[in-house]
Image 1 (cartoon, one colour):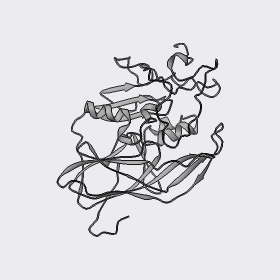
Image 2 (cartoon, one colour):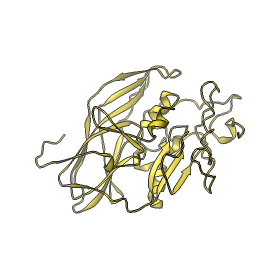
Image 3 (cartoon, rainbow, N blue to C red):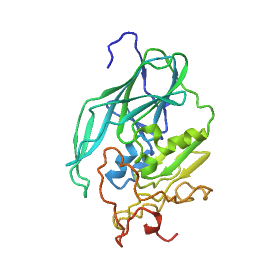
Image 4 (cartoon, helix red, strand yellow):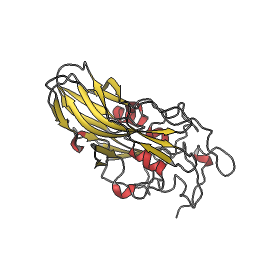
Length: 306
């Protein structure tokens, strides 16, 4: 944290956040959620709960003349016993829509998976840290701080060397995107480079990213004017006693209450991303009951429509 004088501290509220559906007040600050509480109560396992808490597509948005910005945050990083520790998540700062600076927050809590099969884990508390951005352009500007897409982040405080005002939404359409690992950001190395963020920027829409590492099983939580989906990669079949097939319940017309539209449906994008998501060890591809890879849609067992 900087010791310079004349800092202005602005409370981080839901008004400054975009790309989330709810926020949870914790002992440290605000924890953005990408699913509402009624949906989180139905999450069947820790893996999906962790993915939901990753703020993929969530960002702080405000206007200011500040040239230095600090954001205090408490990350929770996910590690695997026997593998190298995860890299620190990246915070992207955009000025008027252009990536201008990046920072990381070292330390934080550590969630260490000790058994890959059962997902048993140990939790170690750690300190909060500060993402610091300096030498920003002079003058009034729109600032976006995209939170790390692959680590849980509690936002605590925002400090600037000039006043901060919430940014108007400009009446842009909301794009509620449903997807899985690639939508979450498994092949991205920083948060504003996840492909839904790039597509939203190109299309001039406000992104809410419901991509959850292999599964998207939600109902429409709010009115939207456009939606999109990506299914197919990284869909893992599981015994019926554990869960339904991952795509079931996330089909057009069932997950959102809308009939299918152009653009809905599976997309063949390959069985694995080019790079594994930061912090996730590289493992062999999961296989279906016949031993075939379980990624492309053709290999995924599907239930008959009701």
